[in-house]
Length: 82
Ligand SMILES: [Zn+2]
Image: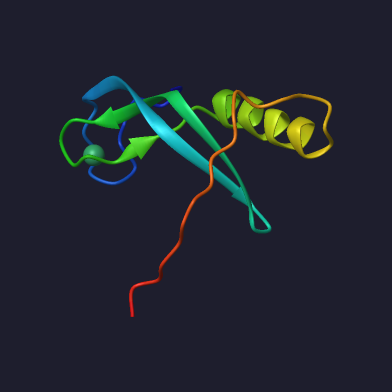
């Protein structure tokens, strides 16, 4: 991250973590386990590197166009809170 100050709380304490990132675009999804993120240890805001997001986006469209294969598919049941 270029600017090491949290946009939310202004503190500069970050921790590198890994998370499951869910990319969604027009009703299609790509789950990306193990995505590197930076988390503000003060307020918990999660920051994604622009480069990381770009590569996820690229992968998403490659899979959509069947140029690349995902690791596996997952059926996701969805139930809205009502
Ligand atoms: Zn913060």
